[in-house]
Image (cartoon, rainbow, N blue to C red; front, top):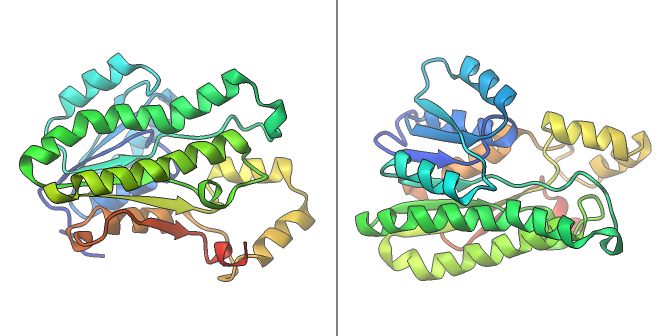
Length: 253
């Protein structure tokens, strides 16, 4: 780790008061970035504030489903060098495609795609003007290979984020802006641990683990390390990449 890698850089990470997002925020701040965290979970924000310590992390309540709230918060954020579009998720209901309603699809697409589009549209002009920027989107193994665990709407939304990433990389590369996506497998955040315990038998969980070549599930810091690299100046010649962070699991798909 290079402590001063992000000195003088300001980063925005959406939906980042807990889980993967909080791990990213702490990693960038520990390397001297000034980090802005958006979230709407009051309990998570309170816990995050208690853990901030001396890190330069500002936490603001922003509802990612509200375009006006996003625009207002983006205006207050000021100059941004790094944007991590971390907001997203599924409905936590393992429904088949035919069971998913129009509302289910709209909610997941809005959370995983539309919210990121809104934020990125507001942040890119400043990056373009300054000739520098790093955009890191959160994809998923599900968006690349499908998933019986998350459902068709989630997989499709993450596939859309990958296409969005590629298009931004092509359009904005000439302006010194890179755009990449990190595509995690099953990372054992408390939420994922709970979902696995609810949906998978012990035998199924052992089979999942056996399918990961490195022999373990992912940890939030694994994803944070990947994000930190793609957000750094060192990754200036890396753009349009879908970086799999799944312990090699995708090799057996």
